[in-house]
Image (cartoon, rainbow, N blue to C red):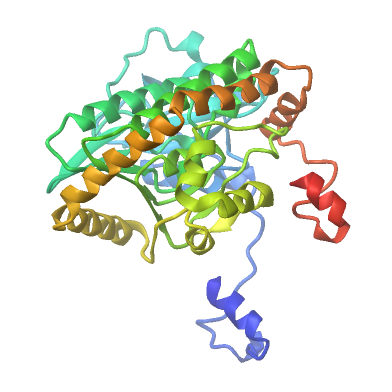
Amino acid sequence: VLLAVARFQTGDYQPLPQQQLKASDSGQWQPLMRQQQRQIDWQQDTTELVMRKLRSGDGLPGVKDSLFDHPCYLYDARVERQLKGRPGEVIAKSGPAICIATIDGAVWIGHMKLSEGEMRFKLPASMLLAGQLSQLPEVTPTQESGYREVWYEEADGVGYLHFPFYNGAMSGAQCRTLLEAYRAAKQCDTQAIVLLGGPDYWSNGMHLNLIEAAESAADASWENINAIDDLALEIINTESHLTIAALQGNAGAGGVFLARAADEVWARNGVILNPHYKDMGNLYGSEYWSYLLPRYVGDEHARTIIHNRLPMGAAQASELQLVDRVIDQRGDAYLAQVRKLSEAMIAAPAFAKRLHYKRARRTADELQKPLSQYREEELEQMKRNFYGFDPSYHIARYNFVHKIAKSRTPLTIARHRRTDNQWKCAS
């Protein structure tokens, strides 16, 4: 794709007509895949085929199925390597996920969408089917079995925290689980902690779908943002280790600023960042962004990032100093490079001085303005978003969760409609 874009930009590339291509290189039209083609036959399909079908519909539209007589769509599938049962039956639960047996194993389904009722949007499978799962065993996640959301590993003086939350959404409970794991990582005999997120997303901040499903969306929002803030605070105040947010996948909204809470942010080339909140009903945001942005990128770049309200690639984020290092690798090669660079960082002669400087800088910053004051100021604005008279956040969240398109393209994107005065308003 990048090669095609580069050729288009030059303006002088002449592609060959399809008739002149070799037969082996000739493309073929592919028909639209419909639910009938991806429908799972639990009595016939192998685990490998079930996973292929589920992956073909993940994100949108999902794979249509029926569980406990509830018509639904299935998402977020992982292979189970130990449990077995009668094909098509739900045989276990693990955190947000349910386990469905296949003819040669089983798969975990982390999220579902019901076809009927009020909550026809993606939610954790174990939440939607809670009434039918009480008699099923709860599987504690391990490397081989269960549905893991957070795990830790270490090598050569560096600790690595993985948290591949689905779509990068982080509920209050997930933030607390990650905070507990992070605190445990700080107690290990290591010198650096790398926060790896997941392969698709590092973090996208608050879990808007769970907030939408809550009895009180305002209370759920408040609980969620405070849980993320607690995690960000722990990372900022880490004195024992250097911390690195290594983005394998994209980050958005509060997830970007949670990453910036680390001492360094590394990003895979190709990662997209959306470092703004305002399109979610003029949400003010927290995660100590009002401290972190000026601290790391400077006032001018901070204004650019907040006002533009546009996605940016890793290279642009690096130019704005939102990202410290761009790594031009993918997949396992990216992870290997992260390990290599992390180990080199702690082995450098200046490592001890750098750790000392980090502590001194944090102490000086705290004397100038305490983190508690930044948090109080941010949350005062967030409280107005959640509980105030302006319902913009709640409307925007509802539309986002229910996939209701905006009536008009935002001015930050629709440059052709923007006047100078409108640009100021959009900012």
